[in-house]
Every structure is written in structure tokens, then in C-alpha cells.
Image (cartoon, rainbow, N blue to C red):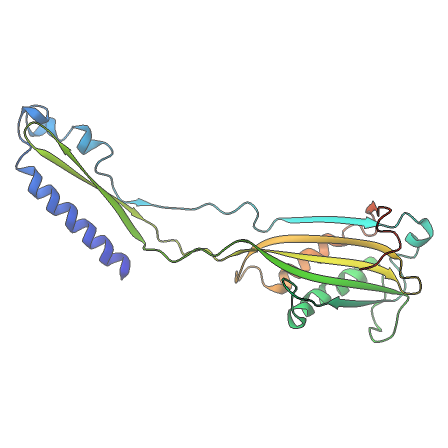
Length: 247
């Protein structure tokens, strides 16, 4: 209803302006009569435009996954990856970290990925030789857009020797304001329980619109976990600053 009301007002203004200016446009000053006057740039050019429907393209970051993975340079440690029992733990914290309720979807997705990699996850309550530590965090990349009027426009006037021409340009934007673009990051470490040594670690990120029905937590978690454990345990070597340190 707001759009119809705004468009009606704009159309009424345009009609009124055209009616008042038509009486003063018949003469050589507008191209030698009415026929010439209607072909003036003021009438056939940019001054009087048809309503323009605005469209917006999708942000190229939406749905794009980035992943980095690292593995211990110790060949014996690497040989322990991808088999035997393992447990999963997720961490909480302040700031952008995801709360315990929302973390369950990510824990479930990681458990599925570990099973696919060859691990045994059937005894989660029993201390296992290897621990998979998770951390899930979010940050806003682009804030949500503010509400705006669907109809906007500009008016212009051209003065000739024998009359005046009025133009009214109308923009129609029926798109909804976009919600915030949010980056979700999933960090994972596989740690040897006895020594505390990091055997493998990685992180994956994805950008999605907040509240987008196409990207519920379960879908995001599955996408990130799948990217992390693709071709597991193949990864880049962990640098010297990370060897033997978990957290």
C-alpha cells in the first residue's frame, strides 16, 4: 500500500506539471511547434524518465568457504591420525564465540566428519587417546541495511524562449533491506591426550546472511566440517611455533 500511495503521488505531480507546462510549449522556441517541442532533449532525454526498477547483485562473499589445514611434521604422530577412538569437545568464551546451544550442530557435523575419516566416536563419555577440540565464532562483515522508502525521485525544469518543460524521474526499489553479512569460523584441533601435542588442526570460514533460511546452523556446520576434513589428514605442515602446543 505504501508503494501504491507513493507512486500515485508521484504520478499526480507529473501529470499536474505536464498540464501546466503544455500551454507554453507551442512555438519556435521549442523547435518550431508542438511536434518539434516534444523532440527536445528535455522531453526525450534525461529530464522525464520512466520509473526505474532497482536491482541488486549478490555479494560475492556469500556462501564462499575458505579453509586452511595443518598437520604435525612428526611422521609417527601422523600415523596415529584417522583411526581409533576420539572424543569431541567444544569451547565457549566471551565476545563473538557461539553459545553452548548453537554449538551442538557443529559438534554433530564434526562427529560425522570424523567417522568418515575413519575414527571411532561411539564412546563419547570415555576419555580417548585423541581429543578433537572445537571453537566456533562469528563476526559481522557488513551491518544490516536500514529500512527505506520504496519510491524516490527527482524533479527538473528547463526554461526556453516560449515556455518551460518539467521532468520527474522516479526510482522504484521493491527489494527488502539486507540483513547483516556474517562470517562463521570453525576451528578444530586434534590433540594427543597423553602428551598434549597437536597432531592436526585447521579452520574454515563461510559468509552468510543473518537469518537466511537457506543457511541454518546445521547447513553451515556441515559445509564447514566437510571442508575441514576433505582429504583428511592431508594438510600443510604445522610450523615450529605450533608444534607441541594446543589451544
